[in-house]
Image 1 (tube, rainbow, N blue to C red):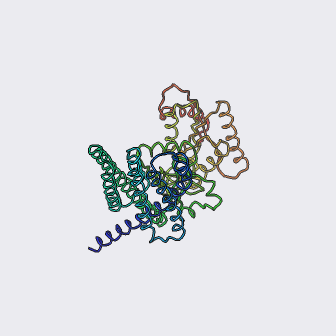
Image 2: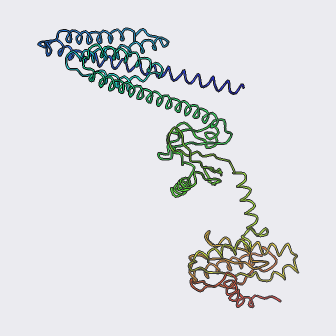
Length: 476
């Protein structure tokens, strides 16, 4: 019951707001119509006192002049009341003005019976009043009914032809009904439009309140122009947006490429939303959710952001550990084979595989212990890493076997790089930094597109090249 009472009170309040709004609008329209009439009345008086001066119908001229003079006085009186009126006094003024407006139209039309026998003035006034001054239907019905009865009475007294009276009565009554229908349609349309605007405003207020209360960073911007419409405090703080920055940014500022924007817009057009889209902005990882919404009659994009920087760093750390060999810090077999396979799947260009086998690891383990063996492997890896480029890939295949993938490199250059690596191995031996020799055997295989080998077959071919050198470095 309490909810129903509140709803009824809200509807009554809305009804009252519309009535006040409509009366304010009509009051302003009366002002404009009065201005128009004041500037038009000189033309009427020229007609009354100059053009119709020789008309042999003094009663018609007298009534017509009187109607025009009264109309002018009504306009001046309205301006006097307009300056002194209060909100609660507007309705009586509007009803009185409209009554006089219709009454003068009816009198003018009845007066026309004395001269030309038409009722056009009355019909025009009825329709104009319906369009310009659509008041509340019950007031409109009362005014039209009262004025129309006066008009029919006057018409009956002046129109001697019975059939002519009937035709004019039917036509004028039809015009009165149409006038009321038009006024009713305009009034209800304006009321419906007012209600929709009120609801839209309330929805906007609720949306804004919820928008700013949301604990996550939110951005709302126009889809067409990119202009940012709303930012909550969380978004300002999260993205470190200063006042001067906000005027320069558009809603896509979190993206890095135009292609990303095109992809997201296409998805929004098709599905109205896009969930869990990851971006990196100013060293922060964010999970973005996009929604295509209607805000103030415009198509807009609402972006909700969730900070996943810690999660992403944890993920990268896990991926890093899962991809690296714990002893040497280079890529492990799984990750290395993934890179090789992906390169082949992408339609690989020429590349060179260097198969490396560290010499004498078993001997070092047996004589100096496994820690020395681990040190041998690490020393070899660190030396190799110094000589290869960033785009090249080094990974541990297993035990004492390693692979280098030389991309966009010629065979003679790859061989020269290996010679430099071997030279550094020898320098370590010469300086006596370690009590055991450091060396490694290698085999180079150049892959050419179209050979259709699997990653394992390519490594096998490089392994075969390595074994040709391996036998030279065996120490018994």
